[in-house]
Image (cartoon, rainbow, N blue to C red):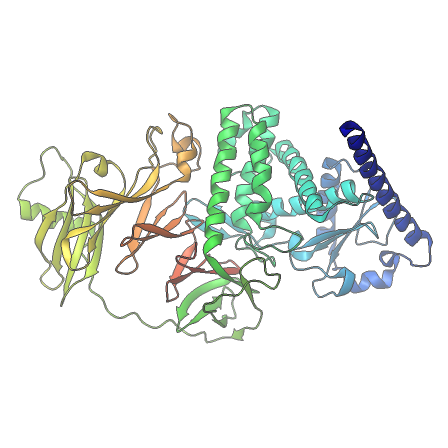
Length: 585
């Protein structure tokens, strides 16, 4: 009985799909031969919607579109911004101010199965996307030179060609159709990137030499994983109308959309190298997820950021242009609203700018400065009279301070011969109340920072980064200790992306760096510390409660305080600014 029911159920589903497919096909035929002509055959319609292309741009686009069509298995000739031809692949670059069925958001694309045309907005074709370097972000002012922009264009076109190939005559649920088109795009994009390897700079964030030596199937998987990592950050700050955190009823946010596909690829790897690259990509996408959990608003700018600062509940942005255009933006306050679709953070669009004479940030109040590490090392040597036993070149690598009474500062400093707290007189340039914390040699073998407690130099906190450029023989993590006890008490730790690499290998084998990972920490308030690992992310720690309040990825993004436990992060030259609220995770 059960088998017969299964057969009937399968048969019903099978015939329903055939019926829906035939209905879609007959609908297209009816539109083509009936009294409702295809508007893309009308030169007057094309004149209203198509973007004018100069001869060189048209030639470059046609060449790349032909390549993408070939990779996707489409043999039809490409017709770019030309009247509809039923035997060709009809593609149009359309304006951003259209309405109705032709309307596209900036950075969007759509395959219209009814008319059999592929529509691309200009910001898909020529997006401005930040390029990433180790510990730095820059924006390519020439989209032709941006590998991320080129890769995003290729992915979007292949995604829409996937819809044309898979869904032209087949009715499929929207979420399933999007997943199938994504998979189609990435599988063919990987083929293209492997095919083009060696013809220019490799776009991968992970070791291109290692990827080149993988078996073909694993090489395609590794390229896909690297590409997804690259896009997850590039799109975060680009000039398209949606960011990595954006979602709508038709499209999930970047991480939710692509993590299942990466997980599927992980199961298909046959070498530990490919498996590691996919695991690294998954770890980085998890950083994007964690960052998105703290984002409560996005600011989308129509001009690139030159300078940015916060003042009295507003963000002032000075554009990176010769005319010194600037804008003043009111930040939202709790309770925070979601986007218009109700699926993500609220979006604030900024298109109105004031030309010339931008405001300047208020001058910071004078503050007392701690001694630099070299001066502090000299003062310590003078106090003790000699270098510590067994230390040939004593040095202090990091000095943290908190204001005390009068002109004094409480200092915490991390040296290669111990962890210390002290009081520093900024007028007399002298140390007093020197306190050496209990420590073990392992603390001094990794980058770290000591933060004094308020009002007491004999207490404090220690952050160390256990990642190194040596062999992976211990957990790579950021660890927060409470000092003043014996021994120091571990109160929090955050595993680092570098912990994903296999035991016995070095970070230098997997990341584009030529020196040890770098840790940089700052004290933002009495109980708030921020630390960044340059090949990972920025972390916000509440030292009083020993908890992580937020993660901001990538580490190279700039931050600025916005009051009430809020921060904004951005990159110079980028088009998106993000507001995070600490502790909302």
